Image (cartoon, rainbow over all chains, first blue to last red; front, side):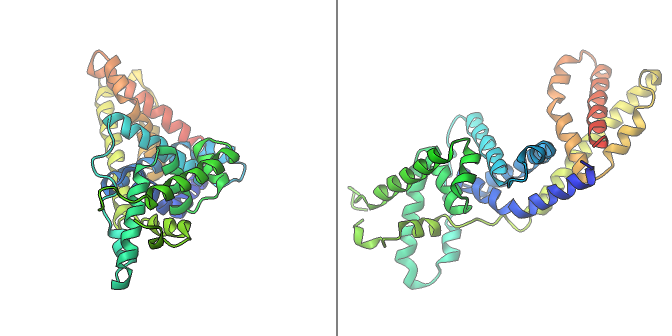
Length: 176
Length: 120
């Protein structure tokens, strides 16, 4: 492939999926600083391997491949730090932006509780929900990104939603 | 929390909670700056090699100009070359006993990567 064509493909990929990669990164690492680093590294890695990915994709969308790169880099980040990030999804600016009217205060609290519960899910379930609901990926895309079968992914998402719903609906024993 | 607080459309709530997150407005600028920084690092390594080559230019005939041309080419291609070369820098430093050997190894790496990009 000509270099100019490869650069054009990369530019298109970057423009089309910057928000996807950033959203995944943000919900994965829990803060904007690391999300920016992760997004940057993801696209640098993507450029390095784009020609091969294009050849092997056989026309299929490259978003699952991009998210898989971000997933692997995030795993390396956690491994290198040997701990979970100190700052999880602690910036509720997204919620503030979406729900600014008084009559949505209670709804906003519910969304915040859901977000808190998402953080407590096992990693595969949390990632699957991020891909499904933050990125709008279908089962097949999620399966490709996670290296699972379509069937296993469907079960994973179903169980993740059920677990999350149970967590959110279970009364807080402390009464908070 | 009681069940009555939550509507039946739990997936709808989940979709609202996990709303897509836009990157900062200046992210693209910083990303381009990162590419530029990587380019600068490549240029430094090339400068170092050219100084080394002056000591014995017969060692590397015909390599300097193509490599330099590749390094000042398109930004994405530069990033590709530099990222790959950077990745091998620690290894080269560990394996090079003297500065000239390190520079020579670096230039070999840059040249190899530049050829791969230019051959596309």
